[in-house]
Image 1 (cartoon, rainbow, N blue to C red):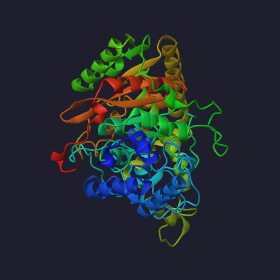
Image 2 (cartoon, helix red, strand yellow):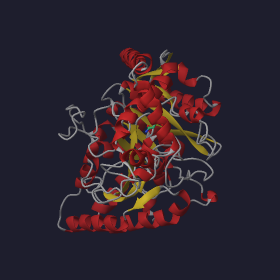
Image 3 (cartoon, rainbow, N blue to C red):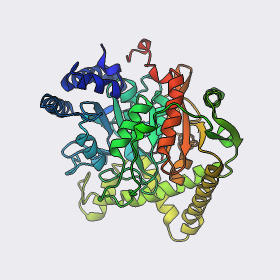
Length: 488
Ligand code: GLN
């Protein structure tokens, strides 16, 4: 039996049934990781010893008769912007190459309390800015479905690690699509929770009014299990709301009877590959056949989302990244005087990060603040209102996750606007603070296509239910990248 091919909930059954040990599970994933990662390069750090030690601890607990929670002994990875005490947490940047946090992020702490086993930290675009993981300061990650293609970004390492079978699940962060778009490119499930659902304590910030951590997994059940563990109030992060956390697995019932689905036509317009639109529409028709009511609708603010996002996100980033000045932590350049030291130290940041800092500083500067930043915030309010109105009429909105399937490595790296366009379907949700999930819904040119389901605030359960219903009727999530590509 190839343990790495099994979803987390199946591994759990084997483990509690005494058919395998946590150590065997971890060893199987670590071996798989070694086989594939020289090609895929999903990881920045592999925590092999730590993983084996954590797995042994789970076996000991089981032998003592303890009832193991669902994620106990399950190998996972963290995007490298999530802090783990003593383990390098680079954020994909040379600036933090040697940074070892002195504390754990809350999401990691909770996964550890749930018994999950950390296998490594995954590659990402520097400071989570990008859509292909090509802006990592360390290396490029390849898409397990086709090594000539990007895995998406910025949580591309987490998505590729799951698709390649190196881990069972992972966490990513999503500021404008960075969980959902790579999930879509790699044929896995990715869920961006409601703003305020999941703690960001210990997560290195990019744009604080947009960032949210969420699960990436092989299937909807595993995503629900992970969301159960990471959600909920944290006294260390005042942006997490006190909203009670339901048991998300209670939503895993195949039923969409009477569900009202809105299909905003702007998400199927110019720039969306026809194969992508077709696959998503097929998915919607399937849900209709299962009892949902489908109606086309319009979200007129859609065309303004990209512009608003690329003012607000860089503005917040320019402020968040001001702390990397060579003094407090991070890289420090040798220099004769203070000013030189500042400027030389900051030059270690990559081109995309610098572009964002400049854009953001400009948008916030006196004289331009009203014209850009303030205006973008007003647009954001309109976007939020339009969604609010749409959710009076519909339970969920369904769109493609990304306008294209995974593109070729190098295709957009020198064209910022083209790169930014790959987030055109995902950004709105962050601006409005909503939850959304991407699930596999088809293939084009041998590459996965993702369907995005958006919901109202704290409707994660509803999204999981729709996604689960779809999954029960389809086989897309069961496919593994082909051996012919040499990855598997
Ligand atoms: N690709 C988008 C950006 O570059 C979103 C990134 C993210 O969600 N972290 O800003």
